[in-house]
Image (cartoon, rainbow, N blue to C red):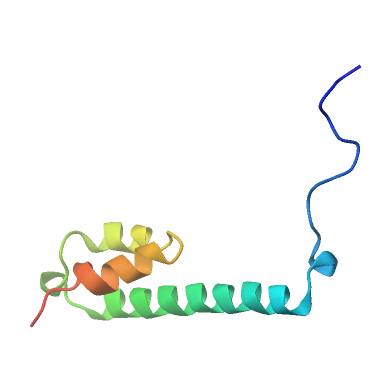
Length: 80
């Protein structure tokens, strides 16, 4: 017999969440999607000489939750 294991699942389903919790998750997802779209669009439009480092690396970094797009927008672009 295995000890320390619960027979009930600790995972929560979408239907278990309250309306404010669902709204917070959707808002965070929308913010992440928007930041990434802005970063990738800007990266695509910028000439390589206006980007600090390789554009491919910044494109990959933009997929890191929140931090990636913010890092590109804050430090990846050169000031003109």
